[in-house]
Amino acid sequence: AIFGTVALVLLMVIAVIPFGTASAIFLHEYARPDSIWTRAVRFAVSNLAGVPSIVFGLFGLGFFIQFLGVGMDRALGLDVQWGQPCILWAALTLALLNLPVVVVTTEEALAAVPRHYREASLALGATRWQTIWRVVLPQALPGILTGGILAVARGAGEVAPILFTGA
Image (cartoon, rainbow, N blue to C red; front, side, top):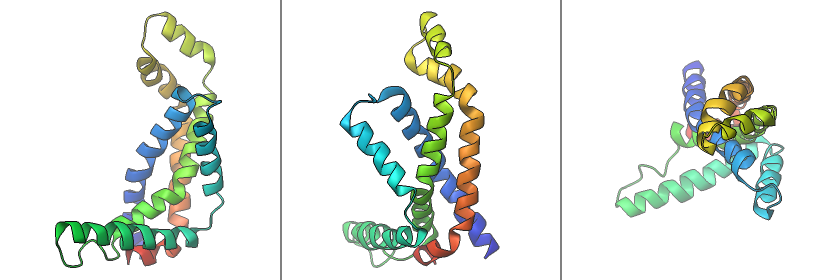
């Protein structure tokens, strides 16, 4: 049980931290705040934070195993290989469960970086991506790591309802 929890949480971290951080960077730095799509994504992320873990487990069972796994088996012409419970599907389900935590905390960390840091970097000739990579992200790193730690803690606590997807 301990090995399964550690393995599941490690795979979940590998999936959720890069995707959640990239999503938050896009939402905060690139997306127009008045866009209907940006508001819809933020609304969806906020709503996903309140969904119980058993619902995510059922979603993982239905989507990752029954739809994606069985579809991969049919497309590759295999007998049941991907269409059965495995730790990969469980980790991806757990990553979806923790995605709102990472996105919200990373977006708050990015919002805490003063605007004049961005303006100074852009005034010195840096591109938008260079400004984000070299100025904003180092300043927001403590908040991003806090979101990662919260995701690990929540992921380790929610392993039991997700295990029927992966075991």
